[in-house]
Image 1: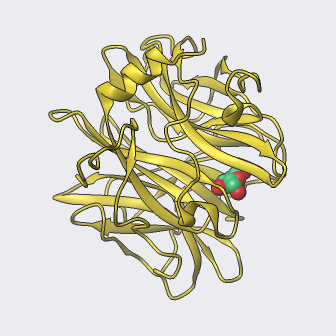
Image 2: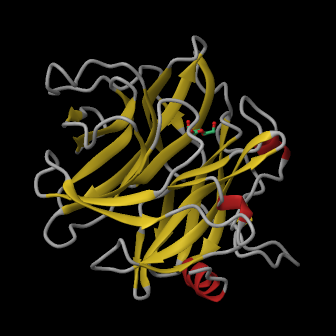
Length: 319
Ligand code: BMA
């Protein structure tokens, strides 16, 4: 997986790749921006589902492949989902995908246009054909992120009920499904933090990459939003959730892991956004590479060690 050692003198828990951004806005002939995208190990390399907004500013999903996780070939043609129910399968828009392997196939979730944003679901085993499933929830909802294994015998997902616009609120909820069709057992996970406790996450929060199972609980990296004089600022931090009852929060970082400060995070179509949607990790070395969208324009990577992030989450916890 992609990796670069912590720079000399750097004391931060996570650090940025020196070659950021790894995917520019013009990687496709028709792209305005490529960001908020998901990658997984696949074959002898990696595959991904990328959010590509075109120059009509239509939000589309595209497949990409990479040998090293850094240099990506993204297909010019957008994903055409198959097999969806007639009512749900009509493409409106799709953005902010997440991908995970569960048991025998890859599942993709994304923010799917259906009378407003909700959580679309599909599966694939070859990154060629994507079989559309039912939307998980009613609109309006965003940031649907599945767990990488069944919990209590069911598929499990966190999501963030929202409104139809640039939602000025948002809590993370947990839901289960026996069949990827009917979702229930909804549980509240966490709310934005109090402004005076942890301001970067005081307006709304939403899950990012697929949670990583550790001996201390599910490591969930999530974004949080601060409403500044200049608009929303998107940073990300970490939480630990109970392994069998993931709506129970064990710890949650007060400080952020990454917040906008590099020029490619500060300037773009939407300034001041770092928005993680995927992470690669290596169980042997405990390394993690988080893929995050920058300023709604380009895609970058940040590195860290799982155990250090777990320690940081516990040490700085605000719960
Ligand atoms: C959110 C989503 C993200 C986006 C962010 C900042 O509501 O639409 O796709 O990165 O806003 O614009």
